[in-house]
Length: 359
Image 1 (cartoon, rainbow, N blue to C red):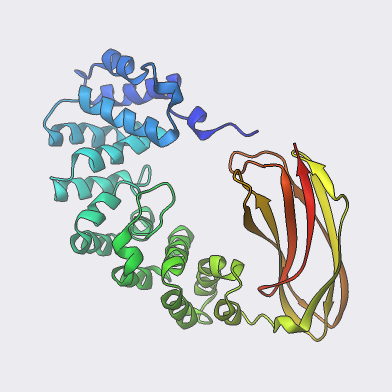
Image 2 (cartoon, rainbow, N blue to C red):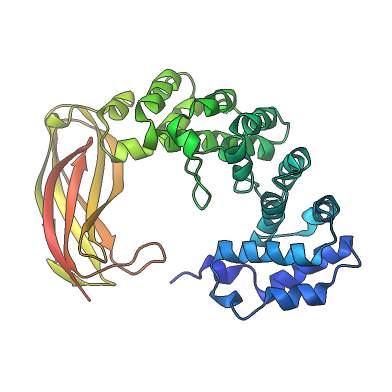
């Protein structure tokens, strides 16, 4: 199993280097005390973001006050702070700088050049969306692509690992001028953030997201890529309007036959191969996927869709096989029970079989 992020960062060695970077800018910084309160009895049990917040709290206890004096030290130290440990710098702003709006937002724009401030800016957007989005608009014009990316990534309604922005989930229209401005950005990282933001919007406001995608698609290679990435959730859900944007053929022209498994029962940790015949009546553009209905802890099934490929097919029958792993992962725990595999063509399930997963 891959090493967990929480064990890769915020280690004794990395925190020692972090403290050295702070002490370099503030010789009076009590490094010894900082390390003592950092590595308390509960430290090893904390998750990654909890370790970040704990680091922030320990900084507050050991840096000089008031806030602006402590912040000045962190700004000077930022170029020397590496890895996930650097998340504590923008988090310090989000935790202790809400009453110093201009100074704090300026610091977040600076910190994002070293480690993204996308999590830290969200409490400001939640507190005052109008004022916060005015800052995002200014960042969208910044010469540094990392700052421009923050303008889009920071206001995503459903940014992973971060607090949600419920007002933007309900009404994402304040975000749209930012996306419009950045959709043709010279940086691929910025454009990908635009796509991720639009994908977030699609989960709560699919019609609005589709309207934007339909307007942008077909104008340039860059915007076409944005639209494709932005539609990924809707495509996996079989949204017909999203499928139509990319010209996928009528699913009634496609059939799946002879779906077979190499084993009807397997144990957690095993692999399984499945095969089937794809029958295409006429020349068709096919988006082929499969779904695994995993058994969850309480016995209910949870559907997970995996893409096989997208291809243009002439009429005919084509044999296809794939392998699915049931090894334990940090992102998925397997449970015994009756599972299912379904083959999906252009948004429609065409065939399904069951199998048993055992301990």
